[in-house]
Image (cartoon, rainbow, N blue to C red; front, side, top):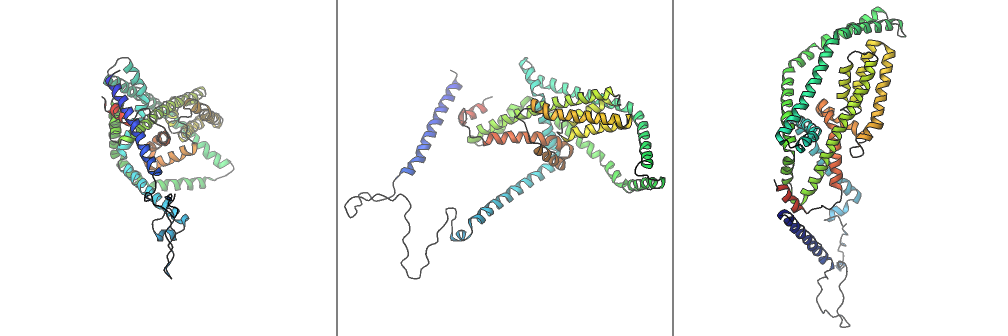
Length: 440
């Protein structure tokens, strides 16, 4: 047996003996007799037993004196006793909820102030959870940790940059053709407005066009101010990208060390439970990200095949858009599929657009009812209402990045809260966990 195992055994025995002595100390005061003088004889000369409960105060014998107030078990003064019990409970809940609301609002304000740091770190955690298995494979193949992390990170960057390059090139090549077909589509819409059920005249169409033109002229200043802030936005994007790359590298290489350092900052008696909840949450995050990537890939391939079959332009860019949109559950897939339907409508007419729409709906139904339950499983299952609320809150707080991070955050919090609320006994005593955490 190693010295560490021997130390661990001694710590376990010491921990168990301490628990037994603590239980005994809690039981003894309950069984102790009241402070009654020993051998206090009664009328028969036999000591009278102590009363089992608290002695009631003697009634006042003074004429005109008020009777003593009967206090509730949860009150400490007569003033509290005058307030109804339900009102006191409601007041207690109210001020606690107010405190929680103020703390939550303060945290949201802090997160909003430093979102340029928080969002890249959250994205880096998602990427680290996605790439961690690849790093583990290289480590088992006897690669040094830094080299394995660098190879995986560079390979992932190369894949992303190559895909974006193909998408942009194909989009640039197909823009002239799509522009011509868009003009034809606009003319068809104008003809339908004239000959359709609306029966709009040329003067009415021109007036509507003039209103749109005037609106654009009136909002030119807003568009110009937005363009002037493009430089600052570009600087934030570049800063966030660099932070994502550095944070992902160090999360992959030193993630376990960082976690042990954070655990050692906590009180000793809660370290084991926080460590258990954190590791379970990390497993949930990894499972969620990998399952989402697989589901998004299947969605993109399924819709992309039908786009190629019906000769829809930008089939590959639209499939890539579906893949990226699938990372925002429910909402993202619908929006990206809607773009594909609009392109089909402009290029091939309403019949093909309806076929593509049915394909998009069918793929999404297959994803929601078959793929996600089968791939993700019950461990990361989240109710759709929680998903919608989380996405809406993420969009309000941090835009598109908030929508991407909201659902994984809910999944992680769900797992962490369940593990923390579970009434389980640790396999090893807290002291042994501390020793193990301090080991290199």
